Image (cartoon, rainbow, N blue to C red; front, top):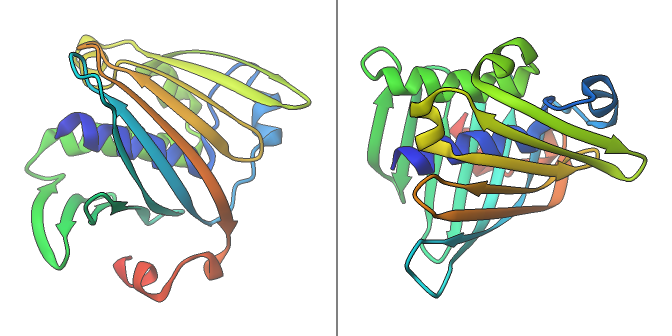
Length: 201
């Protein structure tokens, strides 16, 4: 579960405007940084030892200063809501899991990464990851390699590519699992959220 939570935090935050990479200034200038960003995600997860990948898709919304909503629609509906103070996993109306930052140190780590990405806190990202990247007129690519063994074990190596927004993220976990997420149908501004999504914040 921790891997999925960390991945969701990183991916949704990155989609909102990750500002990591080299050359930093070039990538920052290319990224749109809306207060609200929503869109579609299509995820492919290849588990080590399994031939058939696990496919899922849904919607995400990132609201600056408030958090991230990651709604899986298929194959099974579920919602992950991440804010500064907690991580909540919902299955329908039922709370399947709640982690509070005061009692669960891991929430602080996840949210530290999440809000560093959201806020463009490059110093914090540089503490957590070795960052390598490139940019040209067509887009940019970034690779993040966790510095700490515990974080490396949780998230593995991450690569991202995009333009004004992140278009694709690939994660190779230490255990051999591989996850790819493609983002599409990006919309910015308050109108990008449905009333139901807005109510979650």
